[in-house]
Amino acid sequence: MTKFKGILPILLAVVLIFVFTACGQSKDSGQINLMTWGGDFIPREIIDEFESETGIKVNYKEVTSNEDMQSLLEANPDQYDLAVVTDYMVDILRQNGMLEVLDQSKLSNFSNINPVYQGNYYDENNEYSIPYAVSTSFLLVNPEAIADLGADPITGYSDLWQEELKDSIVVVDWSVEVMGIVLKSLGYEYNETDPEIVEEAKQKLFELADNIMRFETNTPEDSLINREAVVGFMYSNQAVKGKKADDKLEPVFPREGMPIFIDSFVMSKQAPNKDKAYTFLNFILQPEIAARIADITKFTTPNKAAEEYVSEEYKNNPMLNIPDEVAENTSFYINVADVLEMYEHIYSEFKMR
Amino acid sequence: MKKLKQNAPAIPILIWISLLVGMPLMFVVVLSFLSRDSLGNIVFRFTLENYKRIFDPVYLRVFLNSFILAVLTGLITLLIGYPVAYFTTKLQPKKRSFVIMLIILPFWISSLLRTYGWIILLGKTGLINSLLMQLNIVKEPLNMMYRFGTTLVGMAYMLIPFMIIAVYNSVDKLDKSLVEASYDLGASRWKTFLNITLPLTIPGIAGGFTLVFIPSLGMFFVSDLLGGGRTIFLGNLINTLVTRGRNRPLAAAFSVGMIVLVLLVLFIYNRVAKDKGEGLF
Image 1 (cartoon, each protein chain N blue to C red):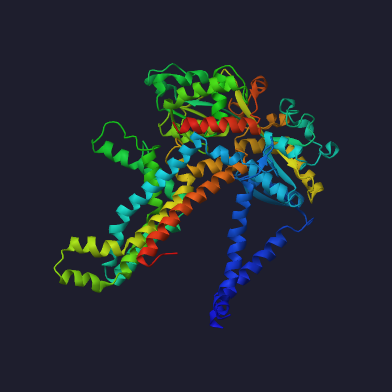
Image 2: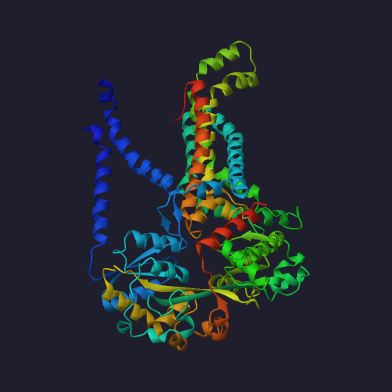
């Protein structure tokens, strides 16, 4: 008997794990299952308020990539009600038939969404998605340090190629975005697949190699704060954090235009708790709630009606309170396979030189 | 029949392993022969395209780069780890277990956090640079981050316990009477080490090297954080292809390539260990 002493607790644990996971997914018991980015992307205090107001429990599953969300949703479409995914993923999920066509009659607050953020390529008729958070990427610079290096002030992407900026630029580590910088600086659009244009961009990209000191996706602003870098190309929420930590840093919205990302709510076609999911969506769409979310998360709210309720800090921050005409001068990365294939190869060649 | 009875207790674990290791592995191999559509969905159409692609000169350099990093990590951990392991075995039993505990202790902390620790040490405004500036040894902060060497240091730091433990076991098991015989016959300490201890601990060295080599192929976050993402290793490439690159079949092909690389090292290890009649696996 002593031989099996060690195995018994393990068996017991395995059984318990099965029991608990089975419980967690029971259907229609006053809960919704929500999946999206971690790090308080939908703030805990907002969820708490929703829970105490409606008595509906929110199961918040944190994931780290759109592709993870796609995998989870496609593996168990009946276990998730809502997900917040980035624009291009809405397009993929709807084409794969994973998404519920939203019943506008049940969405009392959809009209609050700014028309600028409606009807984009991934959901022309606003059938599948509700914009939740808007972000852009642009340059965060340290003007003093740039002057010290003897470089010209930076107003757009093309200024990044200055020799004086050797080893002093940090960029997010993603082929499509780095290629985007190069394409824009040459006057082209994102997602180009014309071989000649791509070849031209590739040569131009290689010329940038000496100036990049670091590729960093998660905390590029740190490199500016600790003075390793003088220019950074990063997401708006990171730039906001950088500026807050160090007032000497200034955002530069490149004259060539900038990329935009719209994270949107989508509903699984096989969502087990659809009615409760609508309740949640309506709750989030309320202007006061949307304003508080924007203040906490440091993402631009697509909720036009919320602009009345946002804090002064948000209102006066051009990185967050994007004027509509600026928002219209942005473009999306499409992320289709051909583009990814081509860019990823160029990017690898670029780094392996 | 007798043999079957003897092996019976191993059957559950064999089923377990074939389910949890064998099946995913088969899945990866099958995946590497499939295609994908323009949305990045996997399509069940047989293709050799993925394998053709990993033989692209650029991607071959990624393989080479990872191989070099893994070999260098193995060598550095050996150079530092061997003496540590060797002298640890010479300590009194109580002190010995204390030292072993100190070596294992960092494993209790998330490896990601420990990597950030290196950033705090080596950064431009980091501890080392601040100290050197304070002491007027350097005027400008040294550029120690975001290089190949930084990745190497981080990798070696992360994996050195594997080497130490492997070598320690090997030295510990060493037949002391052979060493004494060597001294009795008038050999010096160095000569004894080179002719007796070192050859007899080669299986330990090979085992440690293997244990360091294999994970160093896959720890992509170390090169992302310390290397500043300036070169690409296999781990980074596979990670990108699986997630935002939306090309799982190609990622699977790279994984198979990585497995082949690992098998090659295991094969060499087996040859070395068999020659000496012992091994870790």
